[in-house]
Length: 436
Length: 97
Ligand SMILES: Cc1cc2nc3c(=O)[nH]c(=O)nc-3n(C[C@H](O)[C@H](O)[C@H](O)COP(=O)(O)OP(=O)(O)OC[C@H]3O[C@@H](n4cnc5c(N)ncnc54)[C@H](O)[C@@H]3O)c2cc1C
Ligand code: SF4
Image (cartoon, rainbow over all chains, first blue to last red; front, side, top):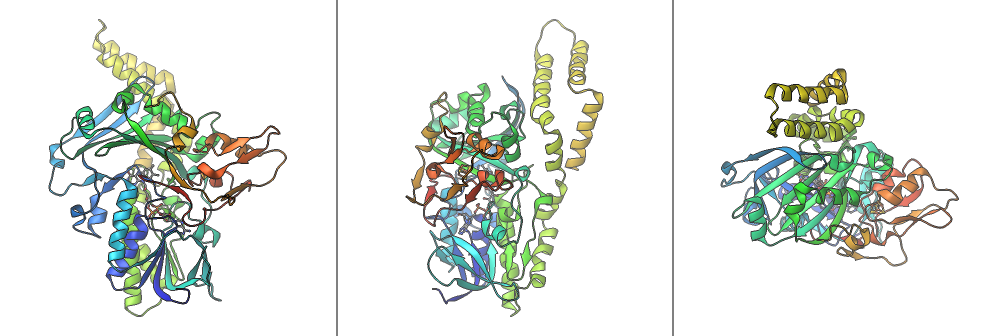
């Protein structure tokens, strides 16, 4: 193996690496993929919602074989205070369509399946092997990788860095900087098992229908973060994530403490009652947005997925950006090598152009100010507004002999008292600008 | 469901690990007085790997580590720790993820 030469080496077998490896092999390249886990998915964590579109563009008939849990027919968005929540529910039978748009999945199983497709396409995969560094020639061009196995390294025309958020290979080779605590969220997640009919009854589901809940508010103890609850076939994924900088600053919050707080909230507790917990996982999410996207190409290397900071935190999308960037990188590399050119920085720039024309960069740019806004005004959004909203809802819905007009002015007054008119207007303005 | 029991050890008990005995993948640099960041890790590590000994120094037992990378990010400026992935094949093995 040591002196064999490949067209491309892919570091990592998450969705971005699998998409890149699959695409390149499909176009006839000789590809080696290296994954440090025992199998694809053994190191990976996700909520997890799978968006069909990104995968469909790679494997059009994935629904026939991929391990999918439930297709999403209902989305709930909750603003929580200490005793309740105010939210939006959107449910539609239209989502019971032939080719559903979103599914819940279990990553360890999904990644294993995706990687099997990659191997069937002809990619050689080395498991239980960690890439330790990049090998460069005298012109600083990347020509291969060194692993923690014995040997002189493995060589290729291009290295695709699909190594995920921690990205040690790229960082330690000086291709990108260490992550900032403000740009990553630490998420913890548990898998709660319950019989399928219990889940169906609790969430008003039948067949393969699923519900997802996204929640924010006082559950994160004022820290910038969100919680989620997703229904799988026979289990419920429950998790919460907050910015690492907020955890580090906070005087007492622990990740598992925040998760317990969410789980024991009156709005959540009954949904999980009687469940058996079978796994506790933790992972970082790159949430710095567009401004945190590093250099994406260089001589002999290209970056995809979380390693390139491709997560849209506002819409909770990541795996679809990972698969899309992986696919586009694979196409660009196949085109370059297919026309007997070399993978120079200049030639690989096509990848960056394709990204800019796609939803990936357009969405990343649209929300580029959100992380900074949350850094500055996060506490109001996570704590004050959920409280105000829930208090207002109570004022509005309680029938207590008070006239409606006074109720309206009560709601306005309590908002004004809590934050002041300029504060409120300022927050609204900042929020609107960040979302624009 | 063990609602009231929020101890980290009980949660980790469910997870699968292949421990690389004698080769911890994370090490804390020797210190007299721990930095603020190191002390924060005794609280922020989701696996509870960090603890303070009687002399006040921060120690790590990386056996339950879920390889999230949080401690590396928090301590990157202060340079308190040496962080690597476990050797290929070792460490946490998620069944669900
Ligand atoms: C709690 C949580 C919830 C989420 N929810 C959603 C969701 O609902 N929907 C969604 O679309 N996205 C979600 N995301 C984001 C999504 O999981 C990521 O964006 C996506 O997994 C990124 O894929 P990737 O292939 O780039 O990286 P990863 O999936 O992290 O894969 C990287 C791979 O590289 C391997 N690797 C790393 N370094 C090396 C090395 N040196 N040598 C060999 N192998 C290496 C790793 O073992 C791993 O298999 C969530 C993330 C988290 C943490
Ligand atoms: S990597 Fe994560 S789980 Fe492991 S010791 Fe560091 S903070 Fe704890």
